[in-house]
Length: 107
Image (cartoon, rainbow, N blue to C red; front, side, top):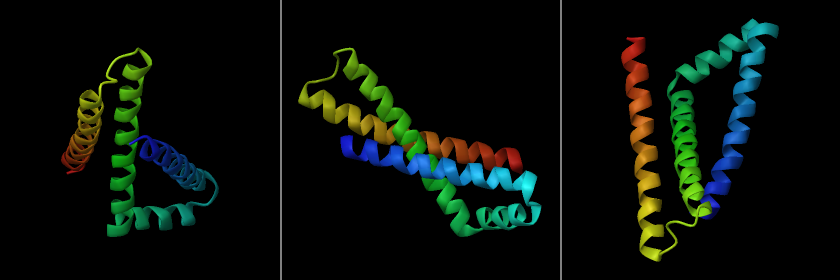
């Protein structure tokens, strides 16, 4: 779980850079912005955004787990495994909630 937390941090950084580039094209190159938007609206783009959202929530939940560790709690092996599975489960639940609410709000 620890190495996965680090990997997701790197993936989030690259994803944030790509999203920042896309947002900057809105102001400087509307044609490219529309092409990127069309890609993100398609299957592969939505899959990318879904996985990026899942990674975001995993990193968040695992970061909260690390905060508990920083306070000296949850170091017993049983608690470590349990908190790891809680982080994974919460990341899936939060991702599904965000995407469900997003689809509902967009019609």
